[in-house]
Length: 249
Image 1: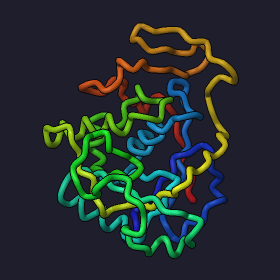
Image 2 (image 1 turned 180 degrees about the vertical axis):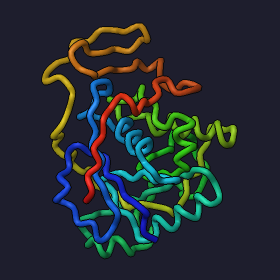
Image 3 (image 1 turned 120 degrees about the vertical axis):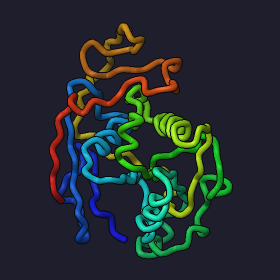
Image 4 (image 1 turned 135 degrees about the vertical axis):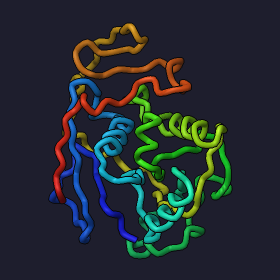
């Protein structure tokens, strides 16, 4: 099964560099004077993709992974049974296999991230590199808390905890396989950031009335640990605080 559409949320990738293989694919670019972007802005990028999507269901998928041929079909089956799911990924040596080989290998060839896959875990196993949900539900729960913007760590687990509490009244999540994704054994280098609204050099930090440490010269902010993992979203994403440009591939 092919996805209805693919949205790449990025200010950095050139559209001409992609072969779409007939897929309905776009790049969604964004700018903001409120939200910091250009470094560790994963929470922001994921929220941009969610709020500006026209789809009824969304699968988030990280850019250092490779999808097997049954990813969308297996995810679609889960989403007919439940409003959201957390998928699994398996580590494998990308250099030892061609892309065509990886696309068709069975999951058990790779090294599992969770032991065992297809089981209940703490919300700390929530990983949005492979995650799917009804878009309306995601928006209703506030999706990724913007308090984590600039951290790239904890935003997935915070959403996993809030969703589990909302839907099942627990603090546990079920990790599903399938769907799964191939993840390289070696860390992939980050692309060079081509666009940013952050200061060049050191920030000038001052605390605001909400307890955030904010730069007085740019939109950068840092939320202290004690403000994180609240019962509700601490800083709700506001789509009015940025502009977007959609570029068809």
